[in-house]
Image (tube, rainbow, N blue to C red; front, top):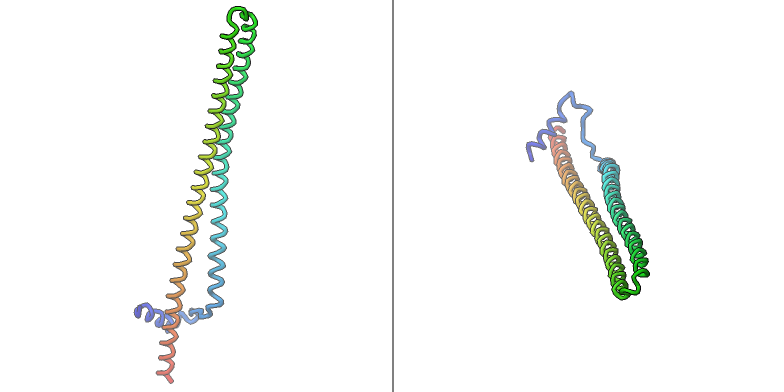
Length: 184
């Protein structure tokens, strides 16, 4: 540490470095540094977070679209089942004399199986949407945590740098005071 301080003292005695010096006004330097750091974090962090959220939104919308397509397929199957039901009803009228109760059972089984299929597809859609929402929330939480951690580390590093800077300034001021006393 003493060698580093001595090197700064020797910089002050070079004739070509007359305009070089330390800014000891802490109030003038720290707000500028902090505003620059905060500005950079806001500028770059906002874009990253916005992109992340847009990507997650698009994935959720794609999942919803897929679920809607499954729903439309189920509705199509329902329409086919209804058409089949109408056909069965026509056949039932023709064969009413030969086994009305058998036809009714087949009709009810067909309706029940169709509703069960629809119910299963609806449950699958809801589970898929819920899973995607939870996964998205977890990923956003992880990203925000990582960015907060990086920001905290940056702040800690900048605080340590300022402390070192202050120590160097104080040591140089002490040595300049000693040199001044010796020369007078």
